[in-house]
Length: 78
Image (cartoon, rainbow, N blue to C red; front, side, top):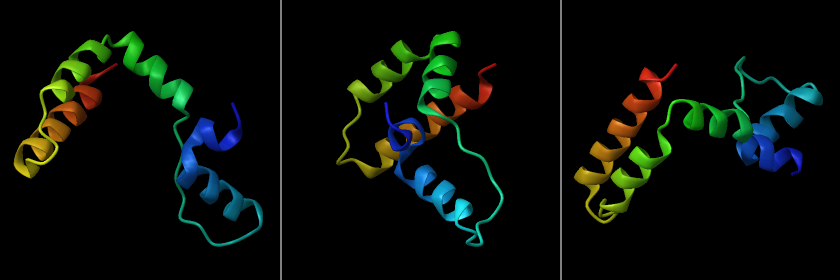
C-alpha cells in the first residue's frame, strides 16, 4: 500500500504541502488501517453495511440521515 492509499489523497497532499514548507492549518490524519481497526474493534462494519445497503442515494434527506447515524456510531466508539 502506498502512502496516498494509507492516508487518502487529501491527507497525502496536505502532508506533502507541509513537507515543502507551505502554510497548512494544524491537524492530523487517521490512516485507513487505523480506521479499519477502529471499525473492527467496535464491531461497526455489519451495522454500517446494513444502514448503507438500504439507503437510496438519490434521496438526499435519507442519505443525510444515514450519514448522521453512521457518524454518531463512530463518535460513540471506543
